[in-house]
Length: 330
Ligand code: ATP
Ligand code: FE2
View (cartoon, rainbow, N blue to C red):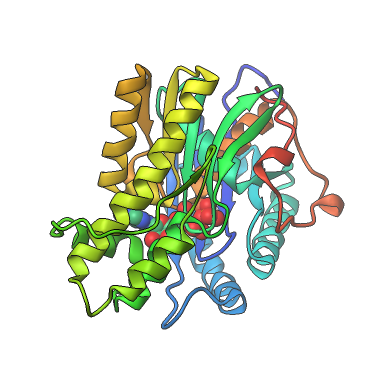
């Protein structure tokens, strides 16, 4: 391993609904392919999502092999999303990663999915030592680096913000995922309806707001419900972010995860950053949700410090928390 050379890393993302394969060289994305399972009704069923992944990985891999500008032999390591996530999905992804590592005779890197959302943001934006607001379908956390770990300063006490948006979206008859549809409806809302607002220290909760918003269905307009839901829940996230910045004195804030695609949330966190006099950075919309590039980029940092996992020890970690990872690359 030449420490001066930028490694070429293949990343596999498959913790829940998305199968993603990407090859990166540092912050340069050579290829990034993904496909997402959409439930016909209700939320994500783990077995159905895993079946979807096992059916689509071979097709995606074929596309990657056909379109990749470099030879497969130039890949230095295989990184995969080891957890947290749905067990059946993680196991399919890990099996493909192990097979690729064996076939190409390259090391295997087991990446924490939440940390990958953070590392993608650090690689492709100028954010240095940020307070991270990580908002997605399965997680909502305020994170900051201290003493070799990404510490969780605050997090949701019940459901994740993306999950809350998707649940409300379903009740309103909007298609899955609800987040983007709620954003569209909210842009036409005007009336601020009263909803529960819960911030405890640097943590927050959203299920009360979901229930209260559901009770307003057929009483108030869809647009006003969506508008009010965004205002209340995003304000709670903004307040907790402000507190985290003021406590840690970190120089920037980074917004990442699927819900980071939301323009109203971006605007609110930008305002907090401006008032605190810190930089604001956000991942681009097309890389906000789950993708293979984020796994490959976190894998790149881990490769540089030789953070590999033996195949025999590479079992998946469905409940692997952000603050359980020893961050040896920082
Ligand atoms: P994680 O495992 O990190 O929790 P995830 O499996 O939920 O990730 P992501 O792709 O990171 O996957 O996030 C998906 C979530 O992002 C969904 O809940 C979706 O509704 C939400 N989302 C996507 N676009 C928007 C948007 N424009 N506004 C609000 N929410 C959005
Ligand atoms: Fe994610």
